[in-house]
Image 1: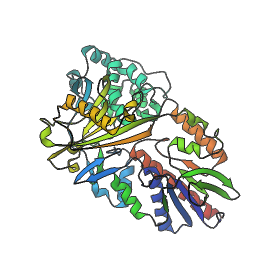
Image 2: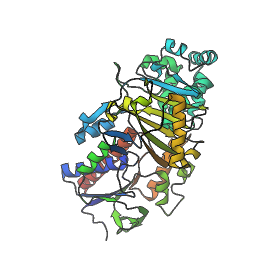
Image 3: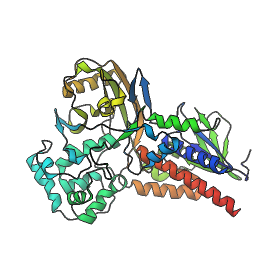
Image 4: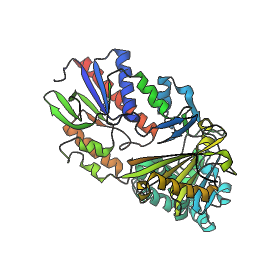
Length: 476
């Protein structure tokens, strides 16, 4: 069976948030403009959403994957508006954030995380840095612009500006919670190109941030005490469920693995694990990079992706009774590598998101695992629980054991955007286009790991494919 030329057939491989978003917007265009397009999504697992996975039970909401998003470009807002679930978006409550250094928790100067540029007073009085560390950080006011290219390690760039202590005690713990990576390998160009731009424009990062009224890692932040992160009242999976509810029956195939992509006389064929072969004119590969590599017989075609690596992590959600804690004053703490703790971060979910649970309960959400520290994830659930409880007893003086513990492993789930990432993706995409011009790579492995970035990728590829098909119809 070959694809007819009267209708265009699009197949999306991967039902994470990128693939789902692309599916939604293509189907939306088909319905609105009566386009002659058939679309199918195949997903290897039995559920949609990828790492977006909300657990709801007995009135308590826990996120097994990411817990929130920072919608800097408005991509999630647009999707929520189109799905008519914008009213369900809520911002995080405000509170203190700490860094675990050694055996103590040190408060992070709020201006480093909020919508105001760093204030000298809060930095000077911070216990997170030594006097010598503060003096070295002040060198940013005088150090000249770097002559190195933008694609350099985040750690090296910020160490040159602020010194090693700032990187080790602040930057690395915060970024580990996002990328689970090593700041000495993380690409500045791919992750924080705006820092390089600020330095090149203003010379000093601190002066540049003061002029732009932005924080160290966030810009365009809402002012007047608003939280910078958002989720949905009933959990992040609300977005996934809303998309799935709009899709037509028979267009989604769960539990079906795409195994190979090849050419046919008039299109492409996708071999599936246990279904008839799918034929397509356009294919969106919205999978991890290593899955994308496995789909093509010619392994040299995506050879640049062989340099990519991943990190394995796990989330550990624990529910306690309120009386098991003497004090609840923080929203989260992040763990420096100069600490003996097993966890890399911990969030008081019900304080950050009051709708998570009633006031009788405390929900703590911890991360374990990052580059160079992944063995912990291979332990049994019981062993992981024991390690995390020990950390929480040491840092928070929690009494007793949790009522509920949910350990969720994410093996090879965190793509590492190391130096050279942007160039590698460009090269791989160019090689792919030479042999398969109608196959498109998208997802967290390629052009952004955050939910808004993945949503934006899905929106962009949908717009591209719809526009190309409309132009083709017009030309014909």
